[in-house]
Length: 379
Ligand code: PMP
Ligand code: GLN
Image 1 (spheres, rainbow, N blue to C red):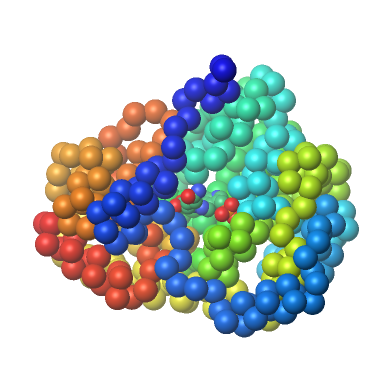
Image 2 (cartoon, protein in one colour):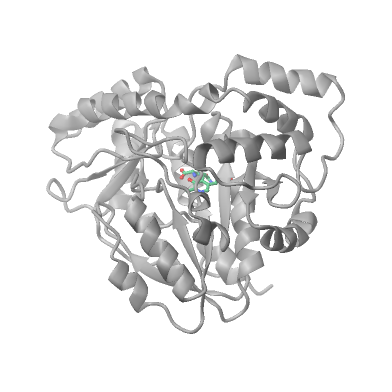
């Protein structure tokens, strides 16, 4: 069998979680909450399982959930996505991204990807015969180099993938970034695929600015979201895609033959749970406190660390402390001191030497403090 993805191996998240398990290390590597979702949400799932919501959901998603997403999006960004024609419920943001990329990209199309990049974008581009074109950012970058972005646009550029708040750097795009993107996308007729899974996790008074909130971007964008991050339910694999009707019609042609529809009772449960905005608007404060707790506890180690602006990840650079490569260091810290992290080089398509580790702080306070204590001993 000839491999369709010859350069793809097991993901770094799977590898580091397995290593953490093997060494009984605290797992601050793979991004998932250590805590459970709310009992109220669990009761809602139970209610809908017991009330017989156990057969196929409609292909685009249970209508009450699409209506709830439409309302939530309108309240958050003032943009109107019609539940019937513009919203599709997906198997996590992973499926939303895969289908959006498959919908937009034809063989030979170039797709601009900022790296470090979440690992699912490039394989999806390549399976569609597209060519990823990378704009490389330092993991501690201050601002997007829009000159570099412009320089890689050619006649073949079809789409651009963005991610804000960003995994792994924790950067949150500014209004000016989005305005620049809007001008560029319009000038070059680009499709935008926007990964906004951490939309409700932004810190220090920042606002998440969705591409959905800018009409000239919304009309050329697929916006991908996930309830896994927002409700501590990564295992439910429930996400969605917002896109104008003519994009959504093409998106659904692929979605219907990939999964057809996604898990029914959970959709009804999330639809009900979304009706209370406090359930997601409280998330930023919840994670900001954890970020501060963790950063404060590791502050004397001497890492170069800018506080994460959003997401549940904190990057630290150890360039001033050690020459070790990041994969070797992440593995050694897992084995020797019992704290697992992700080497940020894994988010680049080529060799890098940025000497940066990513820690996930979606963990109990005691886990964060224990991990910080162990990291302090490794100084
Ligand atoms: N995009 C980013 C940036 C992510 O961090 C993740 C989650 N790990 C996903 C997409 C995938 O989300 P889901 O688990 O809903 O498929
Ligand atoms: N998004 C998660 C992370 O960045 C991992 C998800 C996965 O393991 N596929 O750690």
